[in-house]
Image (cartoon, rainbow, N blue to C red):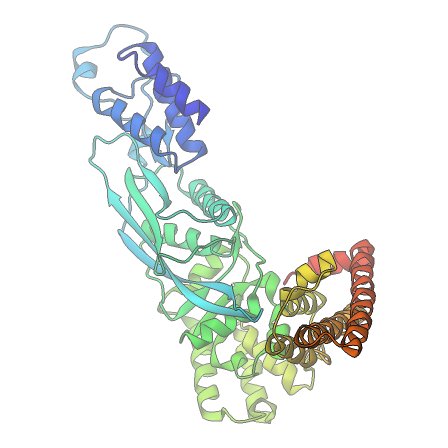
Amino acid sequence: QALTKTAVSLMQNLNTEDAKLGAYLCWLAKRIDPRNDDAIFNLELYLEKNKLDWDWAPAVDEGQETARPPAQTGGPTPDSAAKPEVTSETSKNKKFMKRLSTIKGLVVQQLPNGEHMGSVLDIIIVAKPLPSNSHSGTLGIQNRVGDEMQISFDEARRFVDVRYPFWEASETRVSFGDKYTPKDGGSAGAAFAILMLSLFDNFDIDQTVAITGDVTVDGKIRKVGGIAAKIRGAMMDGCKYVLIPKENEEQVQDMMLLYPLETLWRVQILSVNNVDEAIGLLKPKQEGETSAAFDKFALFRGENEKSGFYKKKEARETLEEIAKSCPQHVSAKYLLELAAGNMPKTLSRSASLARLFNTIGPCRQSIFYNQLVPMNQDQYKGMSGRLSSMRGLVHPDIKSLYESCSSFLSSAQKLQRARDAYNAGSTKQNQINLTGAEGDFTKCRNTLVGRLNEMEANSNLMEKVIREGI
């Protein structure tokens, strides 16, 4: 904002070098923050009455390339004065081959009970061409988003800039099918990059495919969180295929324990390493062995969808063929593991922690401040039920923390009952019960905090949790 204020002040001196400097500073402020409306407005106002004729300013403006005139060694000739000079850079501006494209991303939201629900989110890009004499263009997200999503969008843009440094001038905006819910996180980065490239490279995107994954400037698709819920959400929203980062493959094992096994074959799960690999799988028409693998999986699933069908010899042979011809086919890979009796026994460390913390989330203030936050017995029953369902699934390294959480929750529920009874009638017995419940609550709370501190101090465990992701 300080930079913009200085720039606007300089631009008050029209037709001077100060005004040119102010315009450049506005351009710089716009590059730093593409949502800086003051900088955008004042730069456009300047360009309406002045030419971009400075020979000391960068040529790139929000990805739209404007040629910088070469330094003049002598006076202008009649021809050079009459015609704008076109350099090799401007002649190579990458044209938009289409103006609109849509891709299906995946998001996760936390429900009131602490569970996570995944769902499909339409992400839409529209490029509005600007007049041929326009010197600038814009690219941004239509609505404000969280910092992490903005960073992933900017990184996707940088990746596309590497491939196509010079862009046709346009007003390009990304928006969402759900315009009103707050959005954040980096998991739409790959979708952003693919959307931008689809306008330049003129490829269609299969609307039965959803994708999740962050992206870096080198085009690699990076690990994200919430994979199990996102895959389930893709299936529930009718997608036939879902693309996940290769780095997230192991999280599919958590999905197999958290959700019905049918999720593994109701949607074909595919892993990808980079943007180009994802684009190949996102195109409506697949070719060769990949197409045959997809068709074979869909046919075999439709004919054999019964309990344990993947254990039959014919099914295993088909799955082996699919996995061989399409190595990215995660569904085939893990169905083969199931057929071999290699069902995962426990959740990963990271998934165990995430589910544990989500379950006891409503009690976090009670834990941190050693003061019971009032809740009704139905809430406690719901948390206790979800915690009990985890007992056999928690990773061995997280087991002691789980037991401490379980004891704490039980003591909190007991204290709530004692308080309710005392408030209903302050008898001597109720006072004794309340005092005992308060002591038990404090003891269990201190034990749990101690477990949390031990876990945080265990660098070996924390390293494994971080490497696993969620």
